[in-house]
Length: 37
Image 1 (tube, rainbow, N blue to C red):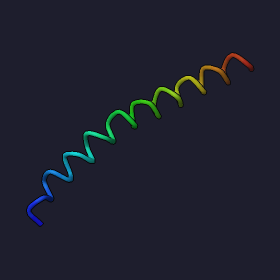
Image 2 (image 1 turned 90 degrees about the vertical axis):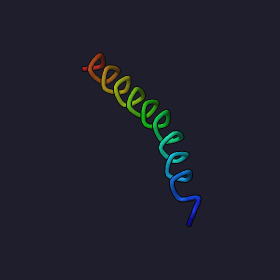
Image 3 (image 1 turned 120 degrees about the vertical axis):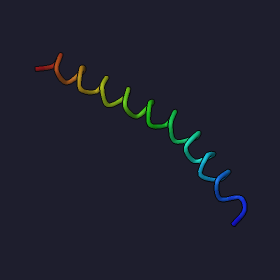
Image 4 (image 1 turned 30 degrees about the vertical axis):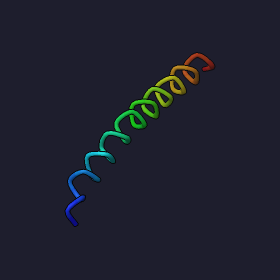
């Protein structure tokens, strides 16, 4: 239980870049679809 704050920090630290990459991929996908129509 002592490692809980560290664990949540690691999860946050790992999820932030993943979220950013996902966000950019989604944005690029939308731009690509907009170009097709």
